[in-house]
Length: 176
Image (tube, rainbow, N blue to C red; front, side, top):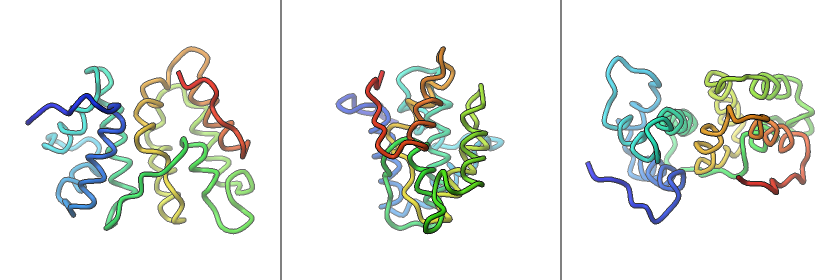
């Protein structure tokens, strides 16, 4: 197995590889990735982990691959998404009951942002909700970095996701 190129950010490389799996109809690899903790890791799991710049970041890249594969189950065209998870949840719902106007989505965001640990199950639920509502997913290239930074002092990622959800014109002025 070759190492990923270093010309692009690791999250961008991961998103490109995942999109390639969808475009090439590699349903076997995508099915493997939909199993977050299989009894034995497969090539797809190792490939997803290989995009992480450091060994301790590998679980976050694998989690992103898992969420991507769940969102794209049965899809023929990849959706790379845009914005963070808060912005993605803002788009979930029907008609006038999207995002903050939808009590279920609002509760889901609250559970996500309240978590001190990376909220794997809640993120899975958020991606499943976006898929079921045919809403655009979060930007897959940004998600692993957000997950890496999840436990940072001051909780900047959770706060940014909350602002994206509740403030339609919010843009992150401090990307670091």
